Length: 97
Image (cartoon, rainbow, N blue to C red; front, side, top):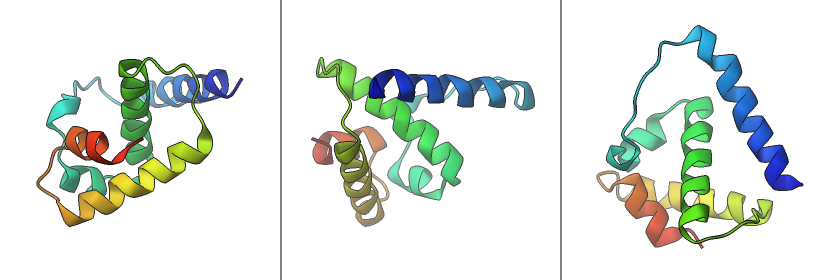
């Protein structure tokens, strides 16, 4: 249920943002911690949700628990503030559980 709700929210966010923006390709593996921490809250949430989905799929997880999502996001943000030159992917791999 939560997974469907999160997916629907992401789809709705993308659908409502699409008419207002030009299409832009983003190489997610090249995002640095500094860039991530400097993003506006909406973009930060979008990138964080994409990364959560990517790593959940990589670990073959089918359930997203909200308590872990919040905890992992906070841990990654703390790490990124300490090591701004690190890639976001590295920060997530080292801190998210």
